[in-house]
Picture 1 (cartoon, one colour):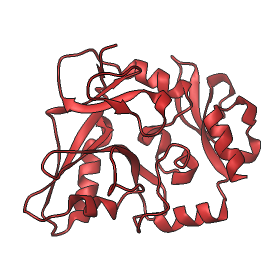
Picture 2 (picture 1 turned 180 degrees about the vertical axis):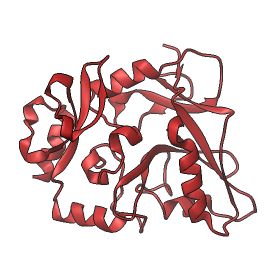
Picture 3 (picture 1 turned 60 degrees about the vertical axis):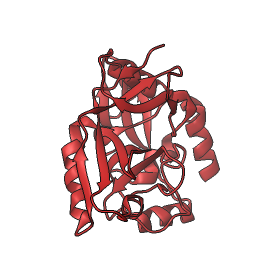
Length: 245
């Protein structure tokens, strides 16, 4: 299968503007996962309270740069937020229109497995090229696996309640980052009382609904763990909840 372009995604480049500037060190102090080791990784930028603001994949770029594969709808907001934390650091933070996010369920040249889970398929950041859009197929595949993503589904939810542990979106070994205190406390206490769950639309609770996809017949709800029937959940999510208990 050839790669599909995800037009609902955008690429942000963080690059040093002077020799010796440490882009990885800058991002390491902001996001939930360890960007100081092998990439790509799944990570998020949280509020001080530990709630999700932006989620993205972090990739290596050329010339000591890092690339963030994020939602196109919030790319400008992400650039502005990161720029607030830059202060006097010699780092350029800007959208990279020449690059695009590519995806396929099957392997294609230069691609690697999605760091959240292999079943999500293969990803790559590459030069934008003329190829078919894959957004609808990708969304259907992602939701079929029960994986939430993006501000509409994750926004303003405590990071561990988004299934961040199970989706490899957090490191408990790295140093401090924004929102780390609440995130670490929840993990230490093993107290994740709610979860984002993909449910059939006709069983969705409107008051707990984050996003609905009538064309797919599903919704993303933010539900109490005590009310979940683990037999109806994807294996990866049921296993994560059982481990937490």
